[in-house]
Every structure is written in structure tokens, then in C-alpha cells.
Amino acid sequence: MDPRLLDGKKLSQKIKDSIAEEIRQMVAAGKKPPKLATILVGNNPASETYVSMKVKACHSVGMLSEKIELPESTTTEELLKVIDRLNADPNTHGILLQHPCPHQIDERAAFDRISLQKDVDGVTTLSFGKLSMGVETFLPCTPYGMILLLREYGISPEGKQAAVVGRSPILGKPMAMLLTEMNATVTLCHSKTKGLEEIVRNADIVVGAVGKPEFVKASWIKPGAVLLDAGYNPGNVGDIEISKAKEISSYYTPVPGGVGPMTIAVLLLQTLYSAKDHFTPPLK
Image 1 (cartoon, rainbow, N blue to C red):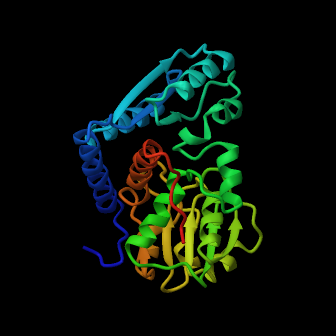
Image 2: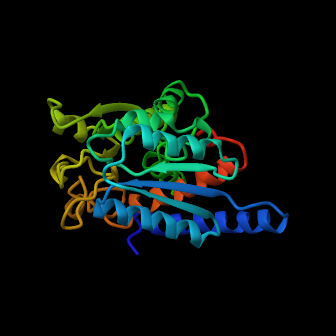
């Protein structure tokens, strides 16, 4: 095993084992297991696969799941009624609306209809706002999964220079906020950033979250940098040229098997937190 490897498969299994044990104790005490509701609108094959993976993960830890499949022709109003029903159901602890929805749906309105207490995927504007203000809430799953990987391997961002390449509202932006909260100095970059190569070369922590295969080149990487690759592109490659860059890094996430497994583990973890009536604990 490469000592520089940040093993998301291993840590995600550790988290799921802990969740399963806690759920066993809840059931033994006469309580109902947590339940995650997943909503799939339309016939996107990739989305169907992702939802099936999440349902399977729920069952693997003893968590209940409700899979709601709506037709391609579903309107925004019809989808909002489904979300309202789930918000009102005391036995549903988490709601996940699978992205993307069909074009006729106002996706942002649908996401924002999810109750803050059930937004275990961390996708609402209210959750984002609370995160930006340092207020406890549920966190976007992929960024929080990367933070847990850093913690597991004893890597502190404090005082470090970090470059986050990608600015999506559920990945790059929240990751920059979380690293800032942990006292890193963060440069939030994107594909149009001027001088990107130089910014990355000065970074102790590099996050690839731009959605372009091997966009961040190995030649840009500072020796000893920590590489967190949240990308997954055709050919089983991420957003960082990991195959070459890993040789000069101090730690790196593989693709696949690094960040991906952590995303689902965090989804289950935050559903458990919701069932226990609290948000994700603060980072400090």
C-alpha cells in the first residue's frame, strides 16, 4: 500500500461500520432506524445508477430508504408536492433530490423546498448561507468527505496555502469555505483564472473540482503537496494528473476509490445526525 494514499474506500467503510453499530443500538432501544428518501425525476441512466448505489448503501448499514421515481414529464409543482410530503413526514430524516432534473423543472426551487433539517446532501441556499457564516448546518457531502479524509490521516490545513480549482456551489465554493474555517489560506480558482499554474505551484493543498479530465497538470504541483481529486471523468481519471503527480505529493486521493466513496458515507452520516436531531458537528 502506498503510504501517500488517502484511502477513501477504507475510511468510508469505517464510517459505515460505525453508523451500522449506532443504528443497531437505536433499534435495540426500540427506536426506528433513520430513513433517507431519494427522488429521481426522469430516465437518466447515470442518475438511476447513483440512486441505486445510495439505496444499497442505506440497506448495508440498516438504514431505511424510500425511492421515489417520477416521470420525465413531472412539473415543478408536482415535484414540490412530493418534497412537501417528505418534509412533513416525521419518519423521513433525509431528502435527496438527484441532479440533474429534466429541463422544465426549476431545480433550484425544488432543492430549496427541502427542509433545512432534512437537507442531508447540503444543497439548499440556506445550508450554503449558514456554512458561509460558520453556523452549524448540514454540509455538502463531497467537500465534507474530503475534510474527513484529511482528519483521518492527521493532515491539518491550518496555516497552509490551498488552491481549490473549481467553483461549483456544492463542491468548489463550500470546500474553499471549509478549508478557510480550518485556518487555511485559500485561493478559489477556475478554468479562466489567469496565472493558475503559478497559484497551484505555491499551494500546499490542491483540490481538483473543475470537471475537466487531468486539467491540473503534474508539472504544476509543488513537491510535498496534498492532492484531493474530486473529479471523475471517462477513462477513470480525475481533474488532477494524479498518475504523474502522486510521485511528488505527500498525500493524494486515487481515482476511483478516493473521494467518491466518502460522498455516500457522508450522506448516510448526516442522515443519522438528522435522526438524532442535530446538524453536523463544527469542524473545530
